[in-house]
Length: 220
Image 1 (tube, rainbow, N blue to C red):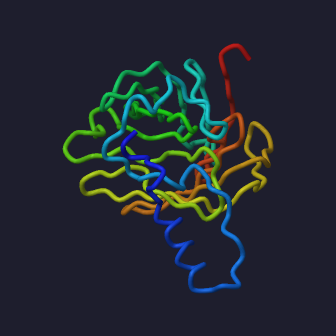
Image 2 (image 1 turned 90 degrees about the horizontal axis):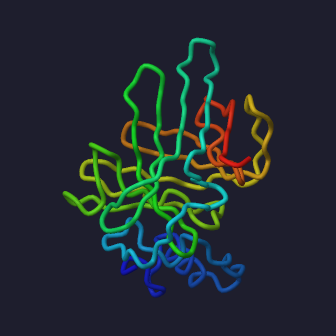
């Protein structure tokens, strides 16, 4: 993929190099993760660099899988996520995650995973699509998220959404159970911010005060 050459560096990697150059006694840099060496957002994805599945352990999208989330109050709307076989965006095969909130029209987001295990957000039906009108795919979840990593989730005209890994292995208690092998993202937009918690092998288990209440994966 032209947007992911090894010579490219993410903004965080560049800052780390500058910090080390200014302090000879600094500790060695952390090992590379899925963010290092990537151009995010990616302006020219090469379909040959992507695989036909999304099995990142923090962001698994198995067709037919469903998640149901309940809010903190009995009157809170129910959120349901469902994975469907996708289509193609900017020449890249995608998997579709359908987000349905009770009383609202469903939202269909397109995701694709590269050969290194990084998951990219390629568009939202009826709203934006990578490769059209200046929009570019951004990173949804690194292959190996590291505390302190930050990345653009997409490049959309008039929008600026940035995610940061603010914690690892933080314990979270949701209606379905307790998880401690987690990645915590803080996602900031021009409208505000939200906190998302992802558990290994499950995916999203909490978004702000809404927690996972049921999970069903085909064959399980």
